[in-house]
Image (tube, rainbow, N blue to C red; front, side, top):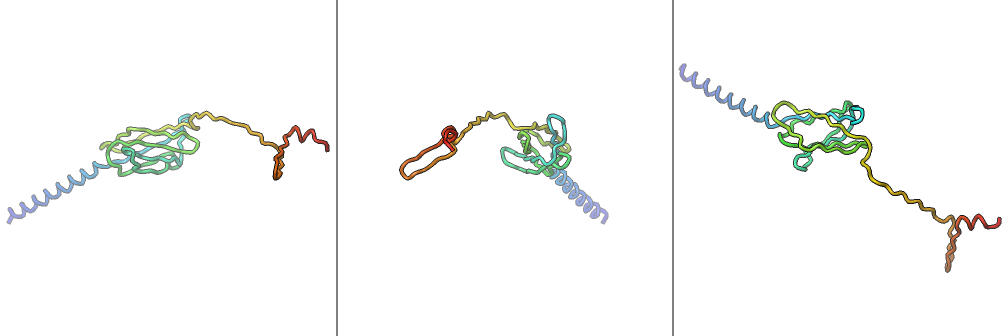
Length: 152
């Protein structure tokens, strides 16, 4: 009888070890990523910035930073991610090759620059004629000088 109880205890202990091993293996396939978004000029925390995570050019997750410029992505598969940050009034920044490993949660700080990237702008000034008089057969245009010279 003692042998049978000993055998049953060993059997359940073996099942317990297998269950623990599977739980540890399942936990090691996922991790979390903490991101802090700051202004590049004065290191001020930036709230409500849009943060997107890409894996192999596929959007995996997206969210906005909190009041303290922080965001946490949980239950991410291990691998290499690209992080893209956008906010009105700031340049979009993409950080490529962020590796998420097994050891603890990964943390990163991203600084973004104010303003838009330089784009040359051409401004053309066009002054239309003041009055156009249309007739069924002819068209007459009066410019500013002609109107100024007209008698009252």
